[in-house]
Length: 225
Image 1 (cartoon, rainbow, N blue to C red):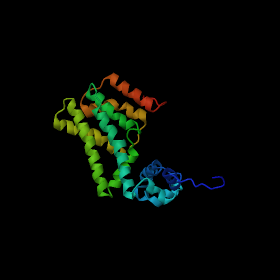
Image 2: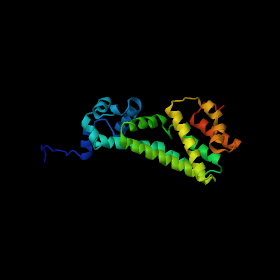
Image 3: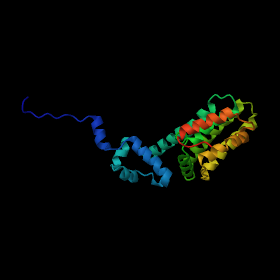
Image 4: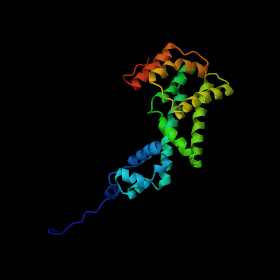
């Protein structure tokens, strides 16, 4: 009818957008992970993060049921990012044990596959929270199981496979924990020696060159020697 006013109902999505402001689930989760890495779990608080995102605290609850729900999703993200790639590469078909180990080494040279800063931050969190420590222990066991199975596939006896997997894994995690920093050319210059140490076998030049080419593709402009 002419002259009559008409009220347009607000849809649920529009209501959510108004309540959420400018934030998204990824905004909250990414900030939580960055805060964990930089400042520890004590700074992963709704009030602190809402100020940094410049949104209301209530917008948090559009994406997370509770603070614990956020914590759970942070751990899920860590598991997917840092444990999944190790297991996937340990399972990848390879002609030799040296090639198989180099597949795993991809995780150590590409932070898109394994984020050492996040790994350390979660481990520090676990020292204060038994439930988190249990998740960390479970992830370590999954990684070790995958690496042990990898050695077994190439003819190593059970005990030998287990010890070599532990040496390979604990060496790298220990290096991250001790914050030992080496330039990529230095790390690559030691690849052959590490492979001999972990497997007891001599890698081929073809295997080493393939890995160096992969590192160069990951870090353009950096010479491998």
